[in-house]
Image: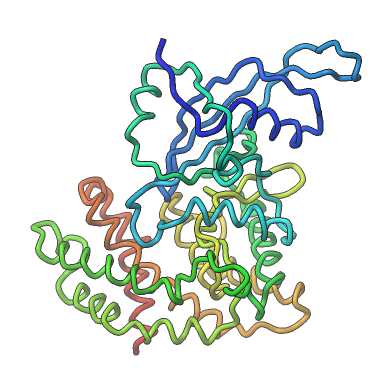
Length: 381
């Protein structure tokens, strides 16, 4: 029988489930693991279907088995500047900031910090052939989080979102930003937060510049970035102040960092937001551009235009703040955010996935290459 070793013990899992379920007598019967498709982070993600029994009335007699689904998310080693420490960042978010937000998130059960020095042995469970073969040697670091799994029916299909779904997601985004508007988390209190327009930029710029040089020397490079455009992006990385100054002039707030329908589940009681590995401090325009640009990239034509998305968000944010938010400043900020996100994120993606992207080049030009360059030109005109 093939097995895998989970990074926690049966005792730690049972104690966590007892707290989560508010049942002091939970007894685990079986754990069935399966590998899930990872998101932008590429972190290995596994669903654990856990069968358990409990004493429903304290009589000492266990009731029939019940089932709960959990998600184990493991950090990756050598994951690049954008994802360095992302698993630990997400764990800290759930431990601290999640409870302070008017935003529904998955509930946390365990993190790597909870089992440091634990005397009991790690949990070994049976696994399918494919999972057992993919489990070892996946390049995981020591950080991981175990949280509740959102029901599949509220997560998929995202491509069929209606205008109402997009407006609900914008409501949640406005709630998130308004909570910390103008007074984001202090790095002295939250030193782990990501700052895509702050002190994390050096690593992002270094990796993106190296990727652009690889694109420049590759036979396929000009299909993505003709020489004139590639040189323009290199100039941005050499002197990013033209974009960063615009972004830093905007009110700073708490940002999700990867806010788009792929990380939002539509529940009957409202959206639930997950994948907080890039949670950080930055301008609201960063999240708003991510929401629009990522949706366009993955889904093509959307039920709301960029203007409709911006106007809906502006109205919602103004209502929550009780003050007017300048539309032209937000437009400039979205241009700067789109150009900056392309400059530091897309070059490495192109290098790593150029074969697949070449097959989808027309769509990429329409949704990423051309819009980002147009934003750059407007910011540097």
